[in-house]
Length: 114
Picture (spheres, rainbow, N blue to C red):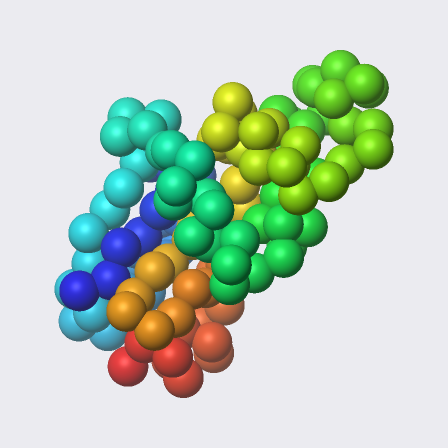
């Protein structure tokens, strides 16, 4: 079974949940805010994707950060920001045994999840 990571009120997460349900793909939902997120999970993800692909620099949370927090980004600094502010993670994140998918793309879901 796959795990869908995100936040409950995110429209993109809701789209992903609808797609998974409509295509009878079983999933477990992990809410960043309610269920938390730890360093080990993000470190595991960053072995599969680049930190710049995981960090949502278009989010409201990003815009509200202090300029010094956004400067001189590195993998370590980005990881700390994502731990401190989970809404900086692009959503949804889907994890299966073999695949990590960031964002909602029906074509990608079709090819990799069904």
